[in-house]
Image (cartoon, rainbow, N blue to C red; front, side, top):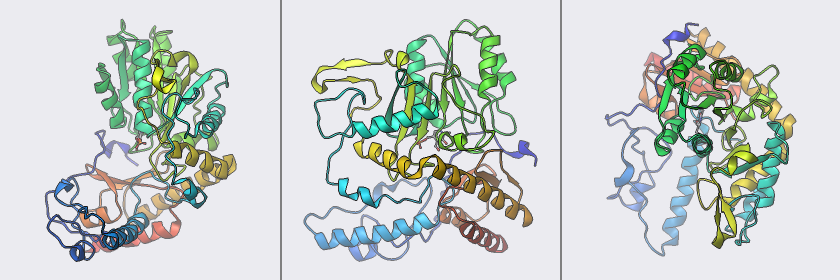
Length: 433
Ligand SMILES: Cc1ncc(COP(=O)(O)O)c(C=O)c1O
C-alpha cells in the first residue's frame, strides 16, 4: 500500500453547497413548517449548513406535541445509530441500570480530591475511575492527580496548559496530523506552535522534530504526542521522541502530553503495542470516555503528576475547593457512567472488544481490496482509510468522515461483520449508479 497517497491535512467533513437531500430518519424541522411537516418526510441535511433556521419550536404547555417530537426523535436516533461508521464512538450502550440516577443534579465542581460544599456529587466514583487509570498508566496513588473531563479535547487543553504554566516561554510541538483540539489549545494559551511533519503512516517524523527543536534550542519544549491520530490511527513513537529531546539538550526542559483519545483504552490490551506509562518522563495523558468505552455522554479522563497540578491550581473559598480543572461545573453522571462501564467490562472485556475490533478492521480492509478499493490500515489500528465514495448521499448515510480524496471507517465494538458486509454491498451498489 502506498501511504504517500494519503494527505497530511486537517481531517474535516467536506462542506457542500448543493441541495442534496438525505433520508435520515423522519424528522423535518423548519421554522415555517407545521408540526405535521416537522414530523414527516425527509430531513434536508447539508453538511456544513447553518441549522439556525430549522429547529423544534418551543410551544408552551403542549404535551402532545412534545411527546410526538421526542418519539420521532428517538426513531431518528435509532436510524442514525444503525448507520454510523465514521466517528470513533462505541454505540453498544448498556446503561439502563443508571437511568434511576437521572432525577439528580450531580455536579463534581472543583477538585475531585477535595470535597466541596455542594453535596450532590459523585466524587467517590470519580476517584475510583482515576485510581483505575493511574494503575493502567503506572502512576503511584500518592503521585497522581486527575479529573473526569467533558471530553478528550478538554484533556488536551489541560495538558497543554500545565506545560505552558511550567515553562512559560515554552514552544508547543505537535505533528501536522494532530487533532484540531491541540491547535486550539495553543491559541487559547497564546503559545507559539511548531508543526512537525509526519511519515506516510501518519506518525510524527522524528528527524523533522529534531530539526525544529534545534531551531528553538533556547526555549523549553512542550510536546503533544499522538497515541493514535484521528485520521489514520497512527501512533507517535514516544520513546524516540523522548530520545530526541534528551539528545538535543532538552533534558529537564520539556513537558510531554499524550493525546490518547481513542487508543488510550485500546493499546494497553494489545500484545506488543507501544506502552503509555508514567514510568517514562511524560507529564499527562488524556482519553475520551465516549469513544472506546462508549459512555452515552461526551466525557474523558485527564491524568497528570500531583507535583505538576500546583502550577494551575487556585483556592476558591465559596466552593470550599480548589479550582484546578478547565471548567467550573462538571458532569457527575459522567463519572458514574465511566465507573459503571469500566467495572462491567474490566480488563478482560476491554481486551475482548479490542481484539474483535482489530480483527474486524482487517476483515473490512481485505473485503475492500477484494472488490478493487485501495485501503490502508495501520498496525494496532481499527481505522480503515480508503478512497472517498463518489456519492455524497452514501457518505452522509453512513456518516463517513472525509478528507480530500479519502474517507475512513472506525471499526468500534458495536460494528459487526454483518454491518460491514451491508456497508460494502451498499458501497458497491452506489458505485454502479
Ligand atoms: C486524536 C484525537 N484527539 C482528540 C480528540 C477529541 O476528542 P473529544 O471528541 O473527546 O473531544 C479526538 C477525537 O476524535 C481524536 O481523535
